[in-house]
Length: 130
Figure 1 (tube, rainbow, N blue to C red):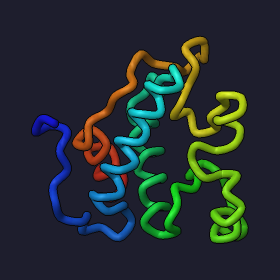
Figure 2: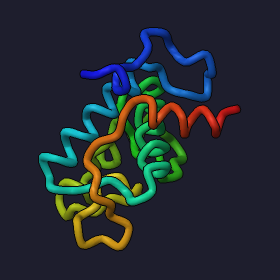
Figure 3: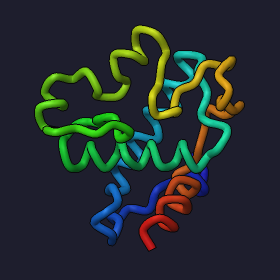
């Protein structure tokens, strides 16, 4: 891993963001899953960054990467049901990602990337939380 992809070792000072450990885990998962399924990240890397951050934050708060792009009345119950834990059932069964994280090559918003650096994600999410 080169220096532009390595997370710093401290947790984020902002409570609204995920820990570096969870963000790196979700970043690695997303890259691996995209490559394994032949899907691509959104053409707008800001979308990819925000979704991965949301997954990481849910992993910190709930113990599972619950889809961050949906509204839930009871997040804990949804984690327990596991339907919307990433990769969600629609993604696993039909390659349909509501979050625009994993897109088939023919999707209108599919880019050509299956990789994103830790720093790219933090740059986007730090701007949102400042």
